[in-house]
Image (tube, rainbow, N blue to C red; front, side, top):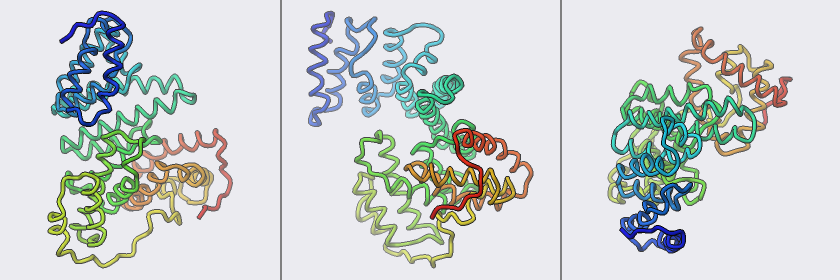
Length: 383
């Protein structure tokens, strides 16, 4: 490897690499080699930045060079920036996105304990940040990273075939409760398919989770590669449900979603789609409440507070109509909530522990909303 010891030579290498990185005709391994020339050079040691560092870590992941990802972040970054016992707390606080490269590498290597160790450092850091910044310019960013951490915990639990623990991460974390990610809906759909734990099978919920993702545009710059893969896989899983699940079989929908998955890059052929759908007999349509129908909604809150028409529920209904329904993830949450909560209330609503479990987080949310100006006066739902 060529030795680079001056700023001029370093800047030249970095500038030349810009066109290389965007050139799709250049093999991935060649891009990695050229990037390594300046990423590991003598000049960069002791500096406060490494050009294309995130891109190099991402290329290592794409190439399946998982140990190189770990070495690059753990060793090279530690050498360049900081070398003390609080290393992971430092990188979690200052460079949280780099932790996910390492987490994904450990997950790929099936070293789940190490992955969870890195996640714990980031979780502790973001929770502390939220204590320090409960409602200012840092709040949204901290919640975003915290939500990604919880989603990764759920992913690991699913990979370990522990759907119950994954579900616990997705629904019971007090900070995560008002901040959801695309991944949280994807993994809730995976759990609800029932393949991992048949006791948690809730196909209507899985359908709503996957439909939310199928409506997203994979060509949008808003999504990272992992999220794009979730959107593509959601189309496949939704098609699979309509092809195989009794009570939900629908030949037209199965073909539509399976074909869309193939067109987006899912590894399935037209022949396989035909074999899966040729003999489908559509299930008799059942009378089901529309997942977007608000009549009689706020099921959990109504159960806990005892009435659909009471001050706390009036506040929550305003929040649903005036805030959640105005953005994409809010609408996704509403759809999933209305699919799942009637069943949850029917199964557990009569138990005191259910009321105790939900009362505190609901009280906390209602209090926060009212402090933000959300009224608790009589309210009529918006159509």
